[in-house]
Image (cartoon, rainbow, N blue to C red; front, top):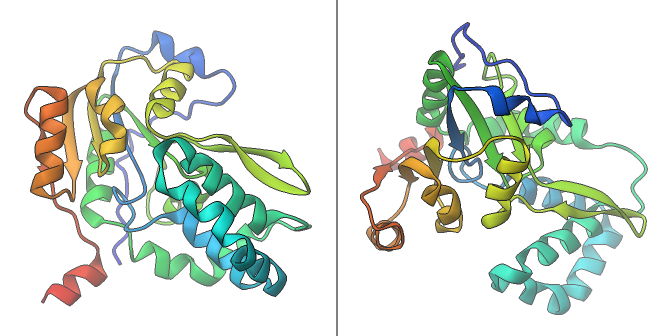
Length: 249
């Protein structure tokens, strides 16, 4: 896979917790989702599954409790609790940071699932007089580890956060739906945003707060639904990764 590099006009990083420095920034803000928008998949799911499968007792406990927490994934209001439980299960009683091992083992294969068109769009946006943000339900460290080898300058990432609980970690904030918009505002990034890229109708609040809307890899039904919700025209982008392109040919 080619290394898609941002041009030298890299945006300075915004360092938490003093994110309100952005309030005085007059540049246009371009917001990208990550899972299924830049990356073909869900990076949080990938590392959670890996942690569970390498621990027989966690895997067995997860299967045993599946009837209790699986329904949490079926509804938007309870989704964060389902994700939080799965993440807790994958981290409970863990004594080391295995993130390095995960990326050392699977990083190269996972990076093949990045959409080259998305990386180009990121780099082109960074080369302009814009502030580029990735706002995602994933944990920022996971996204950063995945992107660092392929981007000269990784954009600032606003994502979900975790906290200690019961010997493991659970979600403290889930950067999803209206919470994503709230977290952007909390970081001093107030709407309207210049452009929003996402694959998901769950980002309707973000789309509504953006001047241009780019819906990624959506079908006609999803596009029509979003246009009806927003009451205005949207743009669509179809992005694929190297493995998908090979399969299609």
